[in-house]
View (cartoon, rainbow, N blue to C red):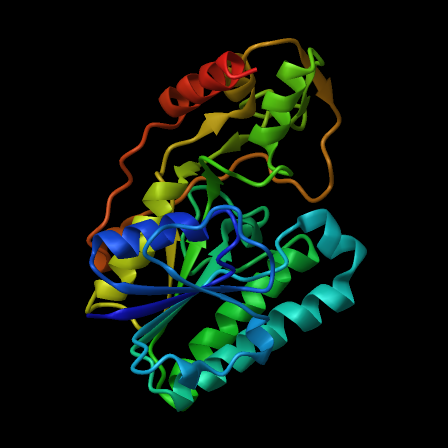
Length: 299
């Protein structure tokens, strides 16, 4: 039975990765220093700071999915030094221990936000253009994983995640905010695009968290990954934020564009299709319509 460790196990994505791993009959371990309100039956949870954890305590560990990270973009802008030290040193320490413990594959979770203002669709070999410290930290983590494979021989792989949505998402996401504003009978605020743009509001490539989780496990099982490659994980389809607001319902208010936001993002999935036995399954607007209605019923 393959063994997998998922860092950041109290977060949004991790419980879904736990579920996907359990379905594949992995023995699953989750680690986080924070309290976990979304524990999954069958997972072995460790409440400890990953920076202080000795990987050798898990005998014959096969895979690490590294999700632990300071992920809030505004917080990274406010605290660039602290978030950089935490995120990069944590990743470095894990890679070192993974090498020492002969892990079969180390999979790093990254973000499509570091593509910045590149033209869409975004391809993995484009010049990265991070617009804030969080994106730069993820880019640095990617580079660290690729270098580590070349220098130390550890099989590594990076998944660049696009706009992830789903159950139990963080309260600072746009969807959570929109639904909360609708409940409070306040207008949903949308940032406008630049004059002459194809769309009045930003467009995003939304990907369901359960599909993302399956992609991590598909990467573990793939014989084509582990060479430090970077892989887009998305649907390849864009949805405007105006469509999102209209699906949720309620009044809409437009506000000026913020400097760290891009107007559109969309993935090229050629590399994903070549390396992973994986396809996204969930339709975003259909899911959102049902979810918003369920939230309204539960009020």
